[in-house]
Length: 339
Image 1 (spheres, rainbow, N blue to C red):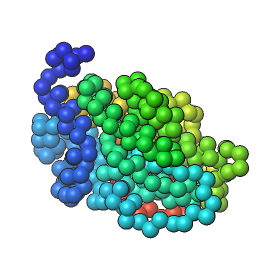
Image 2 (cartoon, helix red, strand yellow):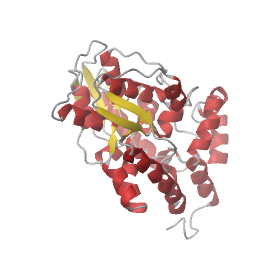
Image 3 (cartoon, rainbow, N blue to C red):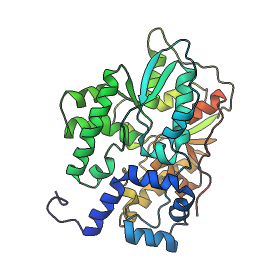
Image 4 (cartoon, helix red, strand yellow):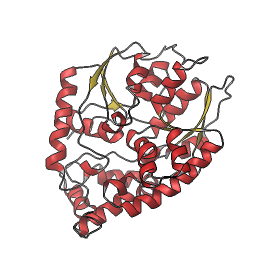
């Protein structure tokens, strides 16, 4: 309402528009990733980051996730597709902007884990940003335009016999809940009914009659894992599927039930630091108190806040399972970036 009635500053409007064009920014940033990461990867509080804050409205004190040299979809199209002898399912991946442009390793591990368990993987043809930056910025018109386009391409993939799998909880919530609320209609309902979180789909497969996951874990298995439960995943009301998945490896899981203070992209906007950073510090305190061997979390933005506050690299649960299988990572994980 504040945005619609002109009660939001011009700078805030510009920031929402900049953050909303995630695909355009992602394509450019990955094409020149070395230069992009010199700017956004500059030490929080540095002159370079202050310039970014003044121009784009992105907080200069928050750690930002770097861009990858190769997009996930590029890797997917170039890879050699294995022959699945016994197929248990067919999914179309909605990779999300974070996996597509910044952490393709999550998507790579997801594909390999799924195919190991007899699930055929493809990409959603025509998929782009889910529209979350517009929604979280209060731009309902911008969000609805994006949402309608995505509902169309997602519904088409479902009618081709595929389920939709999303590796990031914020985007998964958008597809399952917000498209129904803001777009509505049979296609939005169809998308909501056939969209699954990446761990949710695997656990459903494991629990279904006649199928079960491969539990032959011969790789690196963590004995103890601190698992951060993202807010947008809890709100999906599907249970703790990522915890259940990682427990199959034999690991002992400590739940870290504390908001990261990110809230989509809200926590990265200039002016929100006084509210978002203290919340992230509470998360850090709980993780450090748990003293687990590794940290895991589904949301890459929340994981970035974990790195910012603790220096610990949180892996996606799918990556934890991939390492337990002995699947080697193709893309570098974020390292210790704490200033």
